[in-house]
Length: 191
Image 1 (cartoon, helix red, strand yellow):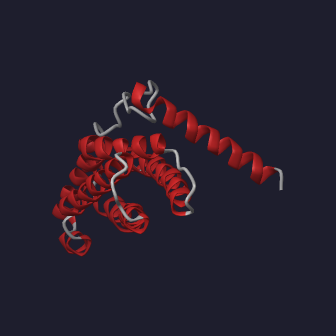
Image 2: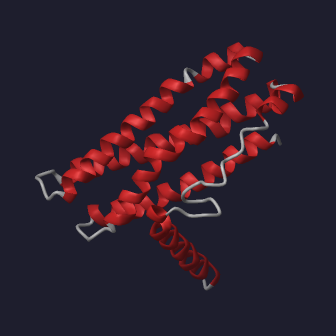
C-alpha cells in the first residue's frame, strides 16, 4: 500500500473515532442529559482546522493524479474539492448551532440534533466513499512515479490531537477519548 494512502487511512480512523465521541455526546443531549460541551467544542474545533489544512489538500492532490490517469473513475467520484467544501460548511453550521446552545438562546433540541447528525452522517459517508472508491482507484491507477511525487504528503508531526505533541486546546479531548477507549476495551474483554 502506498504510504500516502496509509497515512490518509490512519487519519480516517482518527476522524471516525472523533465522530463516535461526538455521537455519544449528541445522544446524551438528545436524551435530555448533560453532554460534555467541551468535548463537542473540541471535536468541532478539530474538524474546523485539521482536515482543511492538512488532510483534504493531500487527498485532492491524489485525486488530481487519478483524474490524469483514470478520468472516467474520477468523474464517477465527482468534484472532491466541492465535497470537502461541503464538509467544512456543515462543520461551521454545526459549530454555529453549538454556540447558540452554549449562549442559552432558544434552539429546538431537535434542530441541534439534526445539525449534529447531519454533520456526522456526511462525514461518515464521505470517508466511506474515499475508502471504498477513491483510495482503491488511486492504488490501481497511479504509477510508482506518481507515488514517489506524493511521498512528501506525510501528516505533520504537529497534528494538534493525534500527533506526538498534543496541542493545549486538544489535551483534554485526547485524554477523554483515550479514557473512553480504555473503558470500551475493558468492557469488551470482561464480557
